[in-house]
Image (cartoon, rainbow, N blue to C red; front, side, top):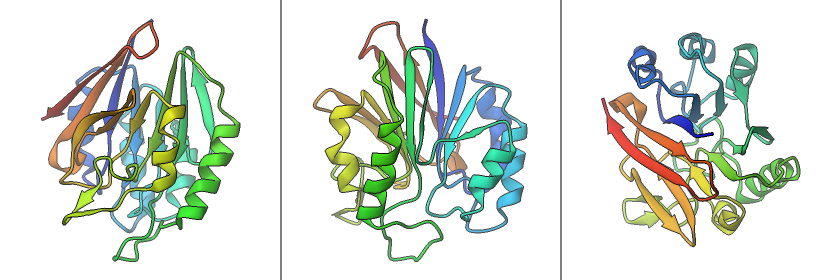
Length: 214
């Protein structure tokens, strides 16, 4: 069966945008981090209350660490450090980011991110479609910030294990790229009305991505 996924990232507390995104009628919503804006994580429940389809989320570097509890207390599922399957699609998640100059709440070393990814992959089983949801992008993939590549190297090294990577973090490097057969998508910040609609077909590698600005 085909699956229509709404990918949101970098909402940064702009919770009133969610109802407009939901008018796109997705089957599933993925939120790739930075749900809140460095504070008041409980307010993020406003997002999940507006989503009436299965929703999977990871924290971003600008989320308070308590955001995972907020996700778990909602009808959404935290993917951070774990993996689960819905029919022919397996979702695996890693939240937070590698270190930034801004000392934001959820920053992890490369080694820590690798450990979280390793733990999550142990729970995954190969499926028709295998999706990695991260906040930070893979290294040298939609990760340029002021002329420097700031992505995560262990995500880059694991691209071969996934058909699709959904990420965010770098606001000015939205796009869709394919690296050795793996599609990587950063829809751009939802706080600016940006999202992606990703349609997964019945066959492996049957992936269509539309970047949308509302």
